[in-house]
Amino acid sequence: MEPPVSRKLQSVLFMCAYNAVRSPMAEAMAKHFFGKSVYVQSAGARKGDVDAFALEALDEIGIDARKHKPKTVEELEEWEGLNFDLIVSLSPEAHHKALELTRTLAAEVEYWPTPDPTIVQGSREQVLDAYRAVRDGLMQRIKVRLRS
Image (tube, rainbow, N blue to C red):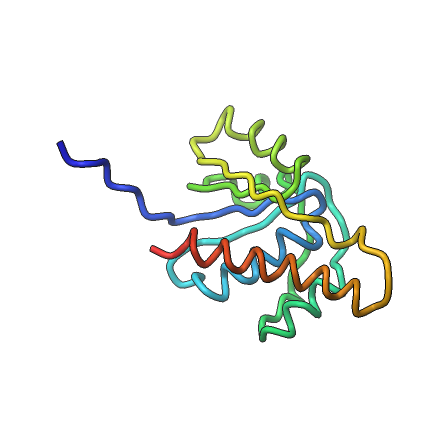
């Protein structure tokens, strides 16, 4: 018997707590690298505000996420329905929410524990370094996971 053929990902939803830092960064990078072949969105368990450090960390690698508007999973569901092959949760709260969603959705859920850079204290550069670390870690995982 032949091994099952893994289905190519057609759509991915990144989720974090507020859709302000981690999930928008992941969405922007996934769209940048795979946007022609994979539909990508992001949402939060709750709604936050756009984070200037997240935008700056993306700017440094040539990705502009300034048009991002934070949204909740419920808002995304109202606008587009929820039909994703893969939901990637980046925070414990988002993972709990993603598992709740899969009671009614046939989506695969992966938990990528990702530190919250907003809790880092220190100089502007130390804080920005925390955002860069999150960006770089997510970029590496996205490139590996979404590569077809």
